[in-house]
Length: 240
Ligand SMILES: C[S@@+](CC[C@H](N)C(=O)[O-])C[C@H]1O[C@@H](n2cnc3c(N)ncnc32)[C@H](O)[C@@H]1O
Image (cartoon, rainbow, N blue to C red; front, side):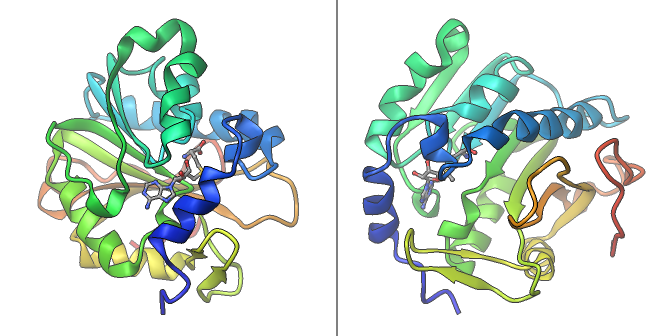
C-alpha cells in the first residue's frame, strides 16, 4: 500500500529544493501565514485546557528550515528541538530563526523512521511530514513519540488528508497522502486518543483538506480530560 514511499528518493527530492518558505511549502509559501494562525489557535486552546501541557520543551519533526519552530513553537516554549534529515535545511535553521535562536536546543539530522526521542516533550509537532513514512514506520514512530511525552504532553499531527477517502501516491517526492480514516486507524493502533481536532480554514480552494489532531496516550484518558472538541477554527464531526 505504501509502495510509493522510498526514503532515499524523498531525500534526493528535498536536496534539490531551496531553503526558503516557498521551497518547503512546494511553491505555496503564501499560505504560511494562514497556516500559522490556524496552528496558533489550536496550540493556544491546548495550552489553556484544564490538563494543559507544560511549555518547557517542544519538538518540531520534519522541520524544514524551521518555519514552524520560528513562528509557532519558539514564541510559546522555553526550548525547541528539531528533527530534519536534509542537511541544507538543518544548516539554515539557526539563521532563519534569527532572534530566538538561543532557545533552539538539539538539531537532529535524521529521518523520523530512525529517530528515537531521548528527551521528554510537552508538545511534539508533526506537520506535512508523515506522508513520507510507511504505515509500519509511522506507527512505530508514533509509539516512540507517545513514550517520550512529559506529563500532559501532546502529539500534534497536522497533515493533508484525501477527499477521495483513499490513499494517494505522489511519485515526485515519493510520499503518500492518507485519508482521514486511515489516520484515525493508525492513531488507534498506536493507543493514541484524540483530545481535539480541527480542520484548517482560510486555505485556497483546490488543495487537500488539512486537519490538526491533538493526541495523548490512551492510559492518560482520565487525567487529560477530553476537551470539548470545538475550536475557533471550525468544528468538525467527530468519531471519538
Ligand atoms: C513539506 S516540508 C514541511 C516542512 C515543515 N514541517 C513546515 O511545515 O514548514 C517536508 C519536510 O519533511 C522532510 N522530510 C522528508 N522525509 C522525511 C523523513 N523521512 N523524516 C523526517 N523528515 C522528512 C523534508 O526534508 C522537508 O523538510
